[in-house]
Amino acid sequence: MKDKETKEPFSPDKGVAFLIQETGLKPEYGVSLYAANGTVDCMKGDHIILAPPYNISKEEIDIIVDTAVKVLDVVFAKVNAA
Image (spheres, rainbow, N blue to C red):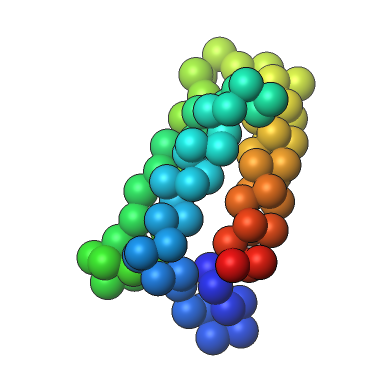
């Protein structure tokens, strides 16, 4: 979200969820983060979905989470700088 205190979401024109998805697919990250938006009022609000298989190991979950955090850090650094 744009502002944690007020819980204001990013504007839909920023395309934050899509940017997260596209960044995750880059070779240096190699993770599929399913993007969606409209969770606040059918227009605003971004989210991603992690959908690992049921037979995933704890180590693999740790890799996915660590990679997702790296992607989010990169994306939010770009979005907040703009």
